[in-house]
Amino acid sequence: MNDTCKDVVKHIRKLQCKNTEYEVGEFLICREYFKVKDITFNVNFEYEIVKVREYTLTIKDVSNSMLFDVPLKSIRNNFIFNYCGTAHSFQGSSIDESITIFDYNHHFCTRKWTWTAITRATELSNVYFYTYVEPE
Image (cartoon, rainbow, N blue to C red):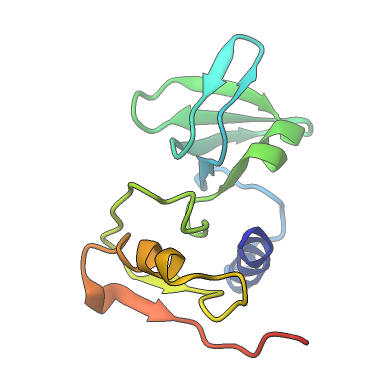
């Protein structure tokens, strides 16, 4: 779920001792199709942050090394860090690294959603479930 992603990002960034919102060298994934000026950003494309300024980030498309200056507001609304995403945002993707599945016991979560999340991993031994108690 999107809220879980935000919570996980906060936790991981705290563990990494990150004090700023974005840093050079971090990777982002576009969450939804959108345009800035005449530049189109597509879902699930990955970008590396190459420059951080007060109101914009310069990001590099990892597939073709093209650079884009994107307003910070657009980054916040349309991108997530590449280490945390929803199962829906990773549909059609294969992940070689370990993955942790959150929210599998949420009342909105279906068996199909859980299956989609599990099948993102290329190896079943790389799948972990985060167990928690949902607030009432």
